[in-house]
Image (cartoon, rainbow, N blue to C red):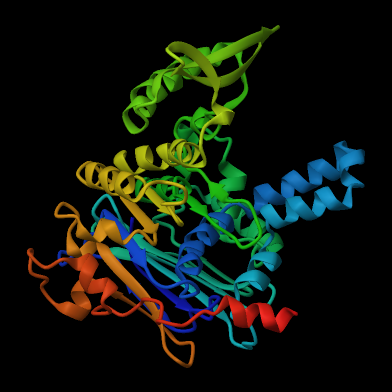
Length: 439
């Protein structure tokens, strides 16, 4: 769970830190980011998505190699390749799309975190094409120490973390070949992803294993202009990433039954038109194809309705469900523009209910000011992003700018009235003037 993030030359954030910690230096379980359009909310959310990408680039490399070698037709489809490269980015693409436009300086992403009540820090520095510094600090035995510190031509690995000398030697050889174009964490996940826990426990310290697990299970859903939503799921139950339809092995049918039971408990609560939920399945050899249906009353008769016909808001809520579950199970979750297509009151009700049960952390960007009127969600959960006339950004918690907020004060009205800034300026829009310019 993240306690702070420092950004240097990352998109519109040239020198910014956001403090996500409580007064007791623990990670805040819920963070809600507000600001006018263009303030940088999605940019801030995307840094966590970037974090998840940077520990998966070796897997992306393998995917493209496999595509080129085994699927000749797809490999020759330039449009498909561009689409895949846009979604599954290598390190150069990540840097070129993330580094502040026009800067000649390096980009720095500096994450402070807490895992199992122990503090840590992960730092990445990149030039225009590759990683030039990577460092991880976390608890060794009792005190915090450096796990690894990498610079071009220099690789320092802590013997208290990398326990097996043969594994450490192999890792150093791999670092000399791939580090820079891939982070060390990406190399480790790739090299040891299919190894048993018994092997890894002998190769790495227990604290490092906990750190790796927590990092890999960070989940993000972000919005990009003129693009579909992008999501990286850190899921313990993989079927949750394909709740609408898909194919599974016959041996995994029990997972589908669990998902059906989950949606039956969820959808009728948030949408009273839905009376029941079920999957329609077809079995072919050892494969089961499934498609989600709801049951609704239409003209007094209960009918099966393909979930594909449900509203945008209902689809969005089902997409959000795995993220809510992850946050409740102790994992870290980032959701950009959570409120898309969902009624303001429904968003408020959901966030009020789940904030009581979050054992991990959920970071949300939203425009829904009605949530600010909540008496359940603490004032310390609300943040604003604003920019000045020179385009400089600042990120503040409401309690930073207003101190202790009186419980009887309406935060929503204070925000709308400009007490906390970070709202659109009033303007005059004339359609007649616009029409005359185009004519």
